[in-house]
Amino acid sequence: MMTNDHTTPLPVASTAGAQLRAAREAAGWSQEAVAQQLKLAPRQVRAIEEDDYARLPGRTFVRGFVRNYARLVRLDPSAVIAALPRGDGTSPLDRPSLTAVSRPMVELPVASVRRNSWTRWLIPIALLAIVAAAGVYEFMRTSAATRRPAVENDSVAPSPPPESASPSTTALPNPLAKAKTESAAPMEKSDSAATVTPPVAAATSATPANTATATAESTAPTAASPTPNAAAPSATLLLTFKEKSWVEVKDGNGAAIFVQTGTAGTTQTLSGTPPLDVSIGNAAGVMLTYRGQPIDIAPYTRANVARLLLK
Image 1 (cartoon, helix red, strand yellow):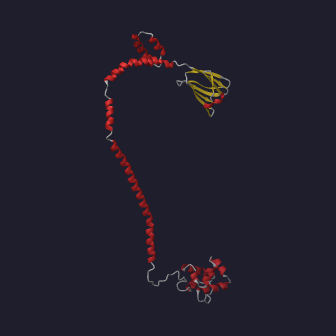
Image 2: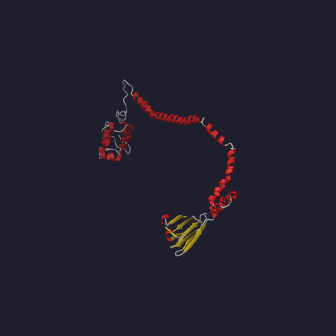
Image 3: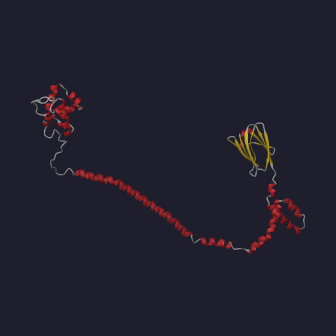
């Protein structure tokens, strides 16, 4: 039998594996060399040559392996594939047996699918039940908390009438109390004037009894006026600068009487209504003398800034 230029005469053999083995031996190749060329394992080449197709992947792969092997050893691929056994060399495992059995084999997969389906839905149903229970519990707790203040308000509601009666009775005018207050007013004014201004009280004590009341009434407006408070004596503060420092001094009325940066070796004398609010930057460079007494500013210094109130 003759073939074209790319094929060699088929050796006398009965199977496809025997033809491939004979062609390989005629070409002088080893099974390892063929396996390397076909990108197969040597055991797969051996299984093809021995027609042991049970050790090969399957029908489609067997046909591909045989076709490539035939081309490699320059045989006609179609003729070699035609020599494959009926069933194309597939293993019995590749084709399940159709022998009848007492129970259909399809029952197990169906039961398994049903069991898996039920298991798959069991977890979401359990989660939904937990969420629903939590929602019911929260609703009941909120309803109970809302109902409790309403009951308490209902129980306390009858008590306000006695409380409302008290303001209505106190709101009524009392003519006797008003008359008593008006008659006692001159005496209260007289006592307060004597307490705030003792010299006035001494002068009125020397006058006759019939003029004491008039004098007390005339001095009452004077005691009520803020004029005596404005006459508070001023205090003297001496600043001695050892280093360059910033100083701010405010008097008792909140007015700034000194805001300046003093240089080393200078002094500054200030007078103002106490208490004096003093703020010093670089407190270590300033000495204070208040009312003739030196003041230790160390206890009032934080981060070399002193803040103190001199009374």
